[in-house]
Image 1 (spheres, rainbow, N blue to C red):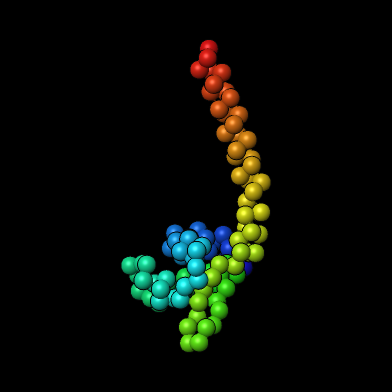
Image 2: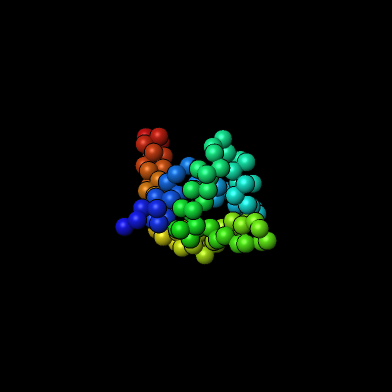
Length: 106
């Protein structure tokens, strides 16, 4: 398995998560994205390549520029996969809260 194409490996990196957050409100060019980081532009380009390979980003050519935007369908698939785990932890924390309230009252 190519780890760069594994979506969870991709979002494990804090820089790539920051790139995804940047693109939540608008599409941006690689240069505009790179301007938000204290790393070399080739490094940001590599992150963009990985996110594109995972289909988290969709590049769109506009003249000479390539604009990157989030792929909402892919993000939805990830959210749907994670949802049962979120529910499980919510249930566990609710049970813990109940136990703590009972213990506090005794």
